[in-house]
Length: 82
Image 1 (cartoon, rainbow, N blue to C red):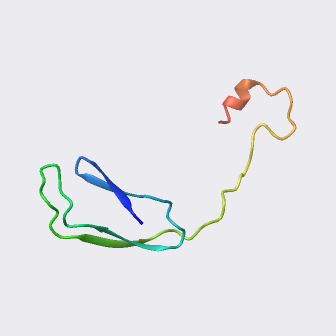
Image 2 (cartoon, rainbow, N blue to C red):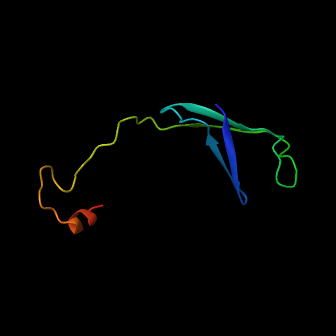
């Protein structure tokens, strides 16, 4: 899978080109030929692995407001629950 590197100051963020699968181990490599804004190369490739979380359960709604079938609900009441 391809990825992009976004640099902000001294930090670099690796952004995958597609969603990562749950409970999967990935290996990321930044080539040693990657250069900074001055054209200086990293020199040596940097490689690491990580594993995504395994929970693939969908979210659960614990409560809702206004309740189903409610009528005459004031706008202020709805706004205060957002």
